[in-house]
Length: 251
Image (cartoon, rainbow, N blue to C red; front, top):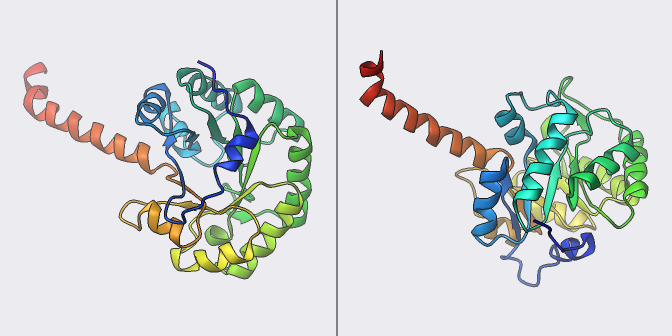
């Protein structure tokens, strides 16, 4: 299947006329989940590195070999007729040009790139990271929507000022969307006012709805690995129920 939306058209979907109607991107992890959400009517899908890693048998945080991650992205993209944007963590140590080549070969329309090292739980130097993002942006041209993740609410001082400072550098480097992951929802209005690009907010189970996050300033709402975790929990419950009913008989 081939999606026909351009990166520019995808970026335009972030421009919301109604604040309570943000762009909602479900995070998928394989062909089955991608088809399910595409058939539910979502115009664009996102992947989750944590979710894809889980189904490939790896931990999140850069443990997935890049060849396996990009192969998984290809399978997801070819299974649906809607565009897919990919979470590729911090790029797996690949050079910017190779990152772009692999993303385009996989057929995705955009990507997330993080500004921290999950292994060391340290933030990247923001100036050096911005320079690296600029190389990715130049290589991509207008073919990919670049979502720059800001990890100050993971490993930094949790302030609007720190997030906005990094965001400004990344925007100057070519980022199209800014993703201050785990930013408290009460800070979203200040972040939206401080950052001159569409804001991506993370929806967590049991928290405010995507509509509420949109009203607070999010132009785009994603779910991270939460949807795959819910699916995994459902499978575990099913397995235990079948095990209680039939497991003893089969031994």
